[in-house]
Length: 143
Image 1 (spheres, rainbow, N blue to C red):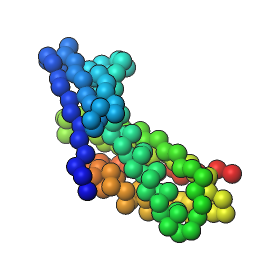
Image 2 (cartoon, rainbow, N blue to C red):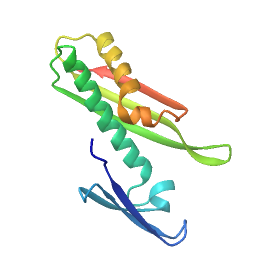
Image 3 (cartoon, rainbow, N blue to C red):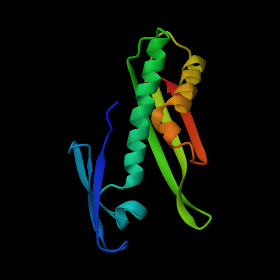
Image 4 (cartoon, one colour):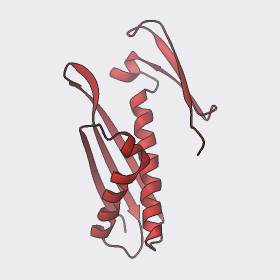
């Protein structure tokens, strides 16, 4: 498999500096700063990018798993909320909450949840983030 890439540049000190980041070869470019990361400023931040990557990976993994078991997938939509907390005096990604909904005809809520748990445990990004102390999942089947 090909290596995937991203790049970033930071200018200045932590509190007053700013940076720009690029996903891949320019599919997304955005600015980031102390305020966009730790407060409510404009721009993006690494945690939002992790959340987007996790939601995308999980949605693909769950869809693939469902299709592999013969279920027709109309859609799987996922959001990921990444939370930073102080752990041992250091800012740490301490929690990720995955919330997913899917429209899959002919499947029960219980069966959907089983596949969702399996996808959470097996998706590439979940495995990469295995050191996060809390990773929760809410899976809802939509009629």
